[in-house]
Length: 89
Image 1 (cartoon, rainbow, N blue to C red):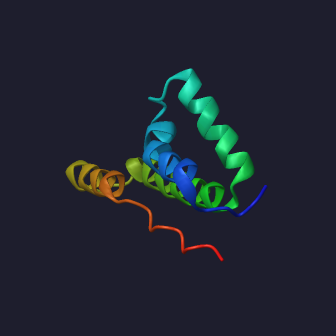
Image 2 (tube, helix red, strand yellow):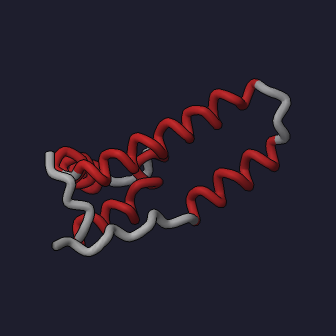
């Protein structure tokens, strides 16, 4: 696995991150995303961080947290883009 974090592959992976986590990508898109994660450390780290965050939010559903608030938080997370990778070299 490299730590590429740049280029069109990473931009496309960032666009597909939440679709992947939500399970709405096609089989082909999911396979491409997974292949990218295997070769890009930066995107793999971003995926893991978002996966853990969503898992924590979902696990709190049994709590008394307001459902509307949880939905607003998830919507805000999905509309947030990951920061661009610094220029290489």
